[in-house]
Length: 337
Image (tube, rainbow, N blue to C red):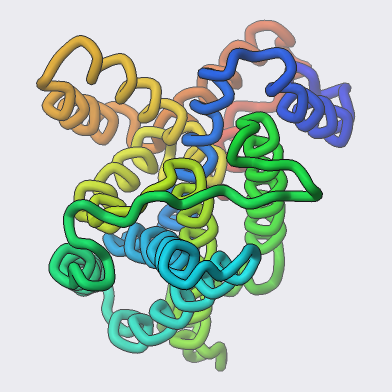
């Protein structure tokens, strides 16, 4: 492979250094786009984790995303509770709701899991829309202020907010990658591939699914924290079916079974959203067509297409020094099962 002679640690450190330098080398607009990609990326990561490790698709990840945001807004604007209590409470409530919802959905399979999560997600949307005395209905809750971190206002400095969010974003990716390689991740993929065999071997299948569901909710709720702080508001759209579908679309565009695919899909979706919404009112129709094209011609998403392209370029450039085609495909497929 190209750059195979460069230690992975050096590549990772160089990438991190470049990300940290963004506020100093890029425009404020680019910094704000990166902030949006990161908080929506955590939502997409939560969905792709369930899809990749358990083989299920949840249409209620936006509920956990929005619950943490709503509790931040309520505690900060109504009760003036200072940081860090609001985000901690918001994440805690989102995880608690996931623990309760998990008792209902975790035994469901396939389309039944999808439909149950859809129903529960719509229930949260209805509460956010109709419980106006608490959520202020469709208008939502405004005047949410980002916190002070080490004496620096992340409300006034987008660069500081970016670095604050980047720390948690990288932490989430690192922890999820480590979890995928851990015995827990191996057991989850075992459940995904053959649930009956894992049960016969004595593994607690239902408990594994339950823990994965709660962890995915935890990741989504962290994204909701930064969404609320950055936008300064929270409304029912954050927990709507539209947001859940956009998350699913981002996952499919990038590659729903990998962490890299989740991030890449989020970047693609946000760029397309920005470009298409500015030139046409039918951008949702165009996004739908792109969604169908991706499923038909690139079922592993942009990440899979890039991997195949990279392997082809490497094999032509390096000849016999490049890995055999079968070996490259096997390693990639193993990560995308």
